[in-house]
Length: 93
Image (cartoon, rainbow, N blue to C red; front, side, top):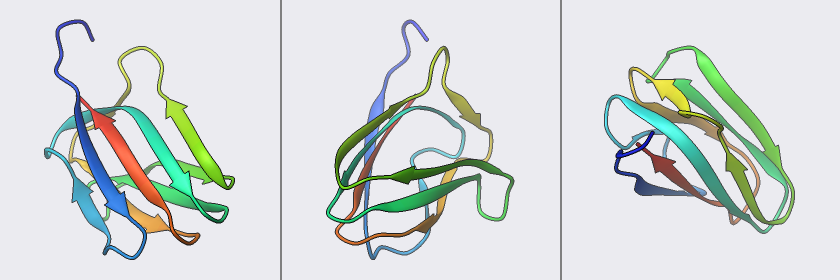
């Protein structure tokens, strides 16, 4: 997405399920820091379709979405996060 602004939004383990960033956005990448293995689930807004479920190992992990990223028309909503000591940083356009 040439010319698009990318913004970073963080979500820490223990925080409630939440809408991340603007109500309509494209997920470009997720940076994950985890002290134990876990997983997260992203839906298209609260109660919407599941668009991404990802497992991750201990340590620093990165997920890059190719091309224009994943479009979340109702916003990126983190509906589940397992593991311990996990911090997620979402890069959204």
